[in-house]
Length: 254
Length: 326
Image (tube, rainbow over all chains, first blue to last red; front, side, top):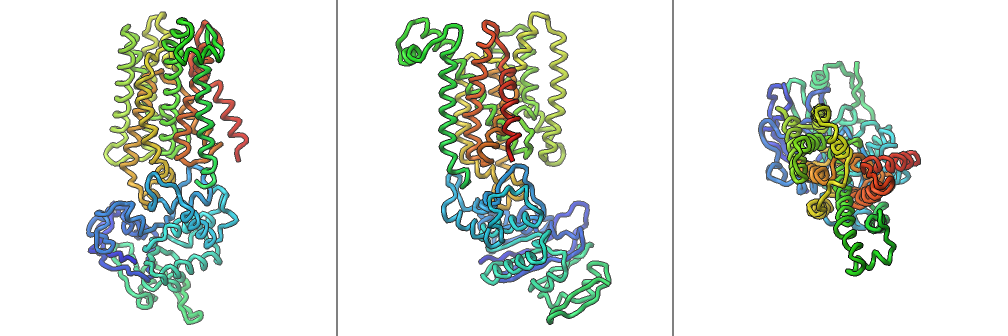
């Protein structure tokens, strides 16, 4: 269980004026979705929350302590990040890549234990990658690689998930499977914070939403209070129609 | 990792054995050949005085210098490839050999002694390193691409200076200079400095292996997994630079070993740095020892530059491994 807090946070996007400061708490069990047009700063915010970028102003705190006061290794034991972009300049198998999630828990001389390997196998199974286990990651499709990244984070057993576009490259079935996995992680007490470009996924799977406007303005709150067509139309500068499917709103352009 | 784990220890033992055999071979072979029993006699303190002299004053120091140089270059190459996340990186990619060569050639041009040649080669290597890092830093922070470009351009600059110095040199000094440029272990006087760096460096890199595995996946991912990226990168760059500088000071700019040995091992053993780094030390050492033995015996009494032999041995082996890899 861990709480991620921001105090008057302004992220540092070069060449952009300070936006509205963000002060909020992301609590265990919550599923936050960040919505905004391209370039609104979703990824920059996610990286800042992970402590990978210095904020221009304000602080990010994990359990009351500023991220900058903690060692990266300590942070990585509680907080996992799934990136949108990945580098694999050297060949590695799926199993090796997923097992890397145990890195923060091992001392420099320690090798992965049977338990670490079991956790990796379990994550591989959860993301339906068992048949690909010994394949080189570089030979996988975009969607398969995305699942490898999520499996790596799952192996990290984080209390806080920071996920940049979890459904990138995924087919419909795996989109649902991944969102269900994140839902289940939250139900078990993790805090989940994800950037999404798909409004309907956010409407269906998030209980809190943060809207980032391109001019740096922002608003956030429980999902049902944020899903106001006028606000979303202004967010994307796009006319929207709303339909109800199984009692949930579905937004369609036009 | 698990798959490679099972192969790790046997592979390292096999490479260590190959290293030992290469060293014994280097000591036994030459203008006065020795068989195994004579060699064992000498090594256990007996044997004819001629053999004693031959082994302990001539062949063993040179073989040990060759082994250490090969180990230093391969380790430096493996580290550079991970740090720059570029398979084409080698120990000289940041212009270290060029700086060392300018220093060494200047000493030769001025007819200074062997000590001065080593000293100025080392100084040149360090000046080049500081220059590349200083300039790559620029006004922002460096990235692998920026560092690589700066290194390549500085190396080109050194190359021009080297060619200029060669054209100025009197004809009788040219062969020595060319040999130095291609790498030649007859300049190696004592193997001690190289070993004094190689052993601690190998031990230091062993516990860094897993962090480097993570770093190979990019600095952001590594930071998210708990690696202190900047301190790790800086210390490993500094280490790789010192390793290269010592290697170049010992034997001139022996090419190819630092680029090829880590790749050959990756093709066979996978890409776990915990295995690749120590394996590089052993395989690089063995390769350069064998190459140097061939260099001084193939056309005896003529000696060939060892760099020629490493390339002649390495190119077909590497191409074969690459061809049959998946």
